[in-house]
Image (cartoon, rainbow, N blue to C red; front, side, top):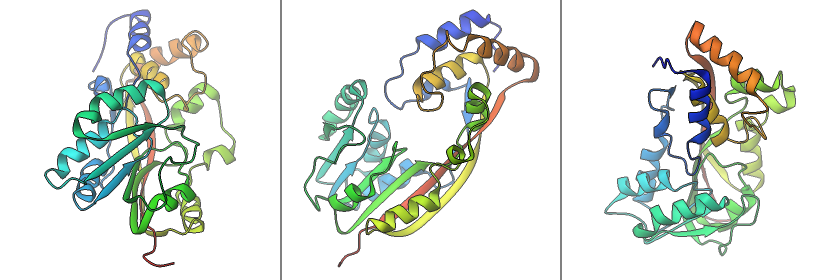
Length: 262
C-alpha cells in the first residue's frame, strides 16, 4: 500500500495507535509478515481439545488463547488459566477471556508461576520474553506437554540495526533454539520436536514502523519518536523511493514433555 500523506501525519498516526494486547490487525495493508508453516494458534487449539487443565504463560491480551479455545470447542479443558505481567494487558485479557471462564492471573514475567506443582497437563506460550524452564517443568503433570512458539535469534534485526547500528554477536545469537533445547532438558523436559523458520516481513510506511517499535518494546529499548526522528525521516524517504523496508522474523516451535516417570 502506498500512502501519500506527509511524514508528520504518518508518524503521528503510528504514535497514537494503542499498543495493548497482541492484536496486529491494525497493520493490515501497512505491514506484512509471513506466518510459520506449523500454524501455532490452530495447533494449540488441537492440543487444548485433548487437555484437562491448561495454562497460557504471558498471554498478552489473550487474543491467541481466545482463538485457540474457539478451535477447541466443545472439547476445551475443564480448567484454563493464563498469566500476564503488563497491567494494561492483564485488563484486556481479563475482559476477553473472563467470559470464556479463563482465570487470568497478574504475574511478572520473571516471577515464579503462581500455581501448584503438577497443576496442568498442558502449558502454552506464544512469544514468551524468557521461558522459565524450571517453572514450566514444575507446574506440568508427569506426561504433560509444553507447546509454544518462541521468537528466535536476530529476529527483525534489519530494523533493529537500522536504528541501533550493528549488534554484538552475543546479542545476535540470543534466543538460540538449540540453547533453549539444552535449558529445557536441564530442567527435566524431553524435547519431542523443535522446528525453526525465518520469515519475510515488509513495512510499507513509516507509521507501521513507529507502531511496531512502540508495541514490541524490546526491539529498540526506550524507543521514542522524538529521539529517533532523523532516522525515521530517512527511513520514510527510503520507503517512498525504494518501496517496503524488508526484514526477517525468526520463530521456533517447541513441543516438550515432562517424563511420565522420574
